[in-house]
Every structure is written in structure tokens, then in C-alpha cells.
Image (tube, rainbow, N blue to C red; front, side, top):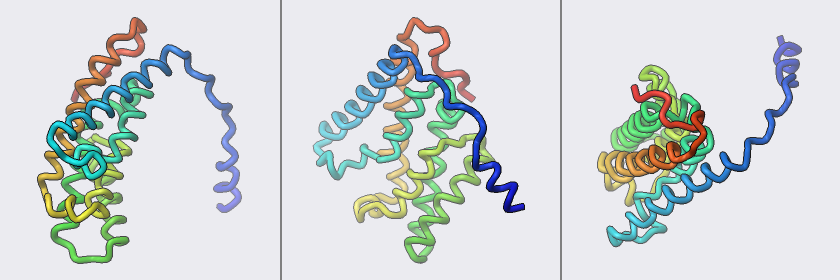
Length: 183
């Protein structure tokens, strides 16, 4: 059994080729515009950008997916929006109602989010980070309770989605269209 496990760790395939420069440029443009726009929205609400609720760290990972791999199942709107919102709900609920050690709460938030995302067919890896942020976030995050799900999570995902719809469909490459599916 152990020999089989270790033999699987060798891999066997070769690294895929580098993607064309045009795809790199579209990925950069989408990520830059969306992350900058989220920061601008934060500053317009007169919130310190460094403490801003709009700048959820997991959005950076989402930007990698929706701009760098827009055809991946993890990147589709259903997964992107659903994964973040479901995970935020789980993280906030655990933080509010379970008085457990933060390490245990964090582990529960991430693992339960994965289960929920699987059951709802909304698996989006950055959702695990969103759940964890609800647990380990600042006192401001905790005091916002379920408002965290609305702002920054739902509003931020909608901002990123709108920009992804525009940027990913500006390319003349027909294989770059976004999304593959909505629901």
C-alpha cells in the first residue's frame, strides 16, 4: 500500500506548454482592473483600504481562476459566487455560534465549506479562504456578522464577475469566452 502511494507521487506526465502571451496579457488586465476597482470602491466608501472589508484576500485567488483559467469549472459564475457565499455563511455561523478554539473553528470552517460546495456543485477553492477569513479575521470582521456575507463577499464577487464578463469576452480568441455555463 505504501509503495503504491509513493509510486503515485512520481507523476508521469510532462509540464504543459507555456500559454501564449496574449492570454497572459488578458489575465493580467482582468486581474488588475478588478482588484483595483474593488480597492477604489472601498476608498469611495471612506474606509481605510488596509482595513477594508471589500478587500477579501480570497478575491486574489479568485482573480487567478476567473482571469487565468476562465474555462475551468472552478471559475464559472455558479462556482465563483456560490463557493464564496456558501463558505462565508459557514464561516460566520461557526464564528458566531461555536465557542471553540480558533484552530478547530478554522479547520471546521474550511472542511465544512468543501463539503457544502461539493453538495451544491459550487466548488471554488478560494471559498475555503473566505470561510477561514470569517474565523480568523479582525474584530471588525466578527462584529459585522452576516453582513460580511453581503459586504465584502457578495458585492466583491459581483464586481469581479462583471469585470470578468467584459474582459474575458473582449479577446478575439473564441476559446476565451466566459462563462462556459451559468447554472
